[in-house]
Length: 152
Image (cartoon, rainbow, N blue to C red):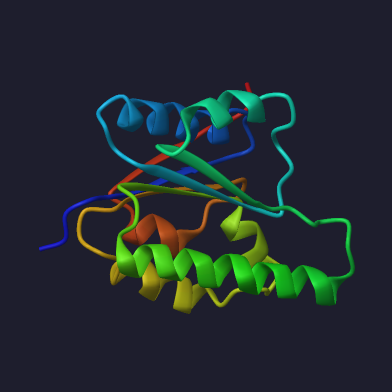
């Protein structure tokens, strides 16, 4: 039986990424290793210095060339997804935050069925956190925990 969990935060409200970061900090405080992969998002600038202090326990990998043409964006997304698959297969971390991955799936850069298969076959014990604005029914079905974050 698989240990670890799939956690899904979605909705139009703000704070999904921050929520995942908070969970990651909780794990780091319990001597766990956290990787965060940002797909096509440019969320942090000054805050990056804070995370530099938490390395090697909390590492952020940014694949955020959103302003480039679609061929280059697809190539960068391929690299990011290969890296994601490697982590899921090898179990290099205890927690993997996939920030914005469903956005690039929606754009057609990653096959959703392949992504779901990778999640289901991940190394035992990895806790995965996924964020998106729109709810994805297939991800909801495989999630152990999910929360909708809305604007009031």
